[in-house]
Length: 412
Ligand code: CTP
Image 1: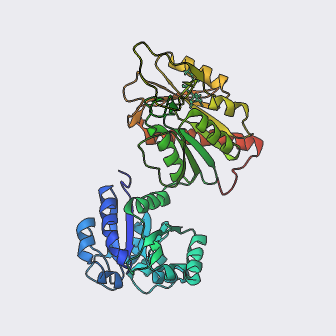
Image 2: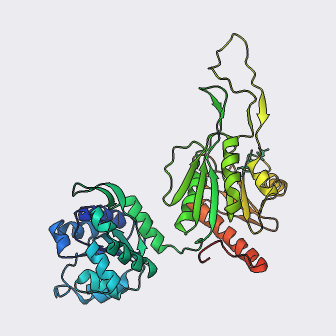
């Protein structure tokens, strides 16, 4: 459960998107959060407190001077109890008040008192959103460390079209989770490869493998959640692009080679989780190959080894991590790949282990470096991704410390 043990104070202010806060409340609650909803008077014109009370299991508070609550839910104690404070939807009015320290209702008095991270999801008419005064107020909030979730563009309830829509619930949940997550990869550029490659034989057939991309997608997702500037170079998969990740789609190993090597110089970490095809058909037929009576032989030719090329051309301080999926002699094979390809780390997994391999949600891996071997127990691919990123960051910090290299921008 993503929000287990977390207390979320969700402030709903008066815009038509207030109804979407009901789904947000429900999803936060389902994901283990304790949710306390505060509403402005005008929000109650759009949706009733009863809706939030039913979904959160807690009283929704509107009036600062309502004495019918026990002391625990007064605004100061809610401000203290919050692990994260969320304003969704946030009107231009509440944004202006927050920027100037005005505290004249339950939402703004509690906001002024809280020390929790604050997430603001603006939703309003495009003209109001684009107005320089709203933009200046948002800039003020950003400068003070508030987390702003940018509104979507599209058709607005007022009939206009443009920026100002409250993003969907998964995007809001992502922004809230990010505000609760230590941004230890902020300023780091991380490139991850994922999925299979496809090597065309003719316009209808290709050679490929069983990779689903889950491991690489999990790494890119966790890197972005922890603040990295994450790029995912992906072969064909059925997976959605993780939030906050820039995705580059490729088909063949040669496409992947171009996409990765052209972006490599600006990366701090490169993690090659893709199952790259080692061979491709020597010829790709322009027309569909027709069957004959006899056997068919396809001549294969070697693809470039992307990881080996990156290993040859590594910039100082860059950390290169490969994957090795083996069916036998796991550690020996992985160690020899680590040296041959000049990697800093290799993530070895055996297709023979239960819970490891293609398409599963779990993995069983050993992290191998030149001077260590760390066997991890069976865990979800997200947990493996976090362990891997933590280990890479630790090694990079040790290297940074000895060479004086700093992340490209922002704090480490
Ligand atoms: N890799 C790559 N380019 C290739 C083949 C592999 O970048 N043409 C990368 C993979 O992304 C992975 C690592 O190399 O990070 C190891 O891949 P693997 O297929 O296990 O190793 P190979 O070198 O292909 O060795 P073999 O197939 O002989 O086991």
